[in-house]
Image (cartoon, rainbow, N blue to C red; front, side):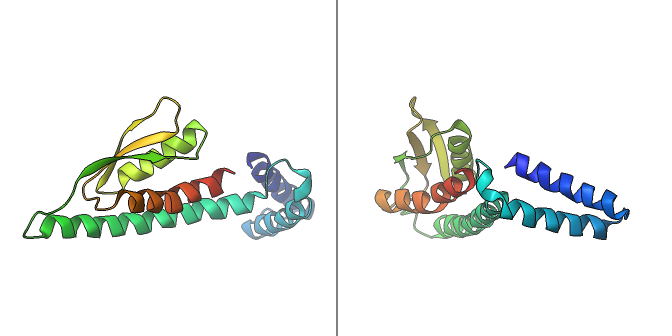
Length: 158
């Protein structure tokens, strides 16, 4: 991915120098032409087209923002109830993520979401132990995390 981005910037600068126009408009035109060239030759690269990965990162960011707002509202509802009948608990979250940065990103996204906290990661990096402030159904919580954060992280990294 980094190679494709650098190649695209290189092509944009080459376009600027060949057209002898050192304006931002010339750079943008060169960048877009470079984007088309890289897209046309995408099968010759070992990784997928980098714009897809950039879109996946943006999608992950907006997913996190959505989950952050929803979790804040859920925690606020739990705290403001006159009767404290929430069910805190710790559950094991099996993960399909393999690399250290993927697992770290998942753990940080879970921890940054209010109401949940990753307490530990197993030695083989296959299970995350998560504390939740209110967890009526463990399987539902596991499926929510796997279908949202874990799936989005896999789209970014693979």
